[in-house]
Image 1: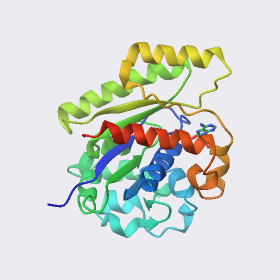
Image 2: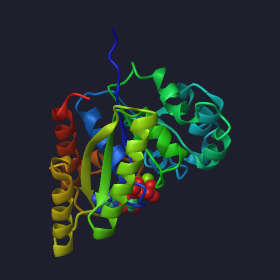
Image 3: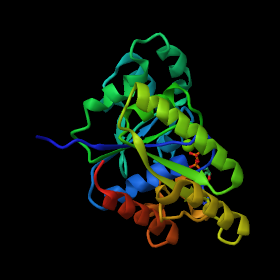
Amino acid sequence: MTSRAKVIAFANQKGGVAKTTTTLNLAAAFAEEGHRVLCVDMDPQGNLTMSQGIDPDSLERSMFDVLVHDLPIREVIRSREIDVACASIDLAGAELAMSMKIGRERSLQKALRAVEGDYDFICIDTPPSLGLLTINALTAAHKVIVPVQCEYLSMRGLIQLQNTLSMIRENLNPDVDIEGILPTLVDTRTIHAKEAIEILEENFGDRVFASRIKKTVRFAEAPVRGMSVLKYDPDGMAAQSYRDLAKEVLSNGQR
Ligand SMILES: Nc1ncnc2c1ncn2[C@@H]1O[C@H](COP(=O)(O)OP(=O)(O)OP(=O)(O)O)[C@@H](O)[C@H]1O
Ligand SMILES: [Mg+2]
């Protein structure tokens, strides 16, 4: 029997909390450990695609065609540091185009079946909303990693995400669960950040990862070069923080 990939969705309907950064860099850290990794870009912004140096405007076919026209996902995968199933702005029309489709919430899950034997991990980046693209990701996933920026307002959004996950469990994917909540963009100099992490831990206990991702300009610099932070600055603490996160996820083991 061939083994199947562990599928992890990275979700938070709040924008700019490091979903894409976490998807790419955790994926790169898995790859460093010798795992076979596919990243799926489910965001019309195409940030994940771009951060591996691929121009979304140059793509003839993308995740739009996979989701809407059942194009085999292999046809939109490009090999870089990790494999990327690419997205471009046309994905913005996918929610409407899929709305007439029977099984519209399962398009991604279905597409991934063809490649789940080829990878150890499939990491899905989602847009900052809880629409049909994110629902497809949560339906295809075994686990969800939730990056949160450590400030009070972000905490409210977590409740909303949990409600969506309950609905997904009831109707579409009974076993999906949160792998962990990841504090990102942590500014260790501020009391506010410390307090926000404390509140997070009070409310979500050991669901909060021990790893924390600190604020550093390396994360903005790396995508401009089309690289993960692990490749751009391999010895830096930014890279190390995602290696630590990878160890934490790998040691959690079972799906
Ligand atoms: N730890 C960090 N320190 C400093 N900047 C960071 C860090 N992580 C991410 N960034 C930067 O913050 C911005 C937002 O990150 P990212 O694009 O990963 O968030 P996102 O949640 O995917 O956003 P969106 O909701 O728009 O998809 C980017 O410019 C990124 O380079
Ligand atoms: Mg993003």
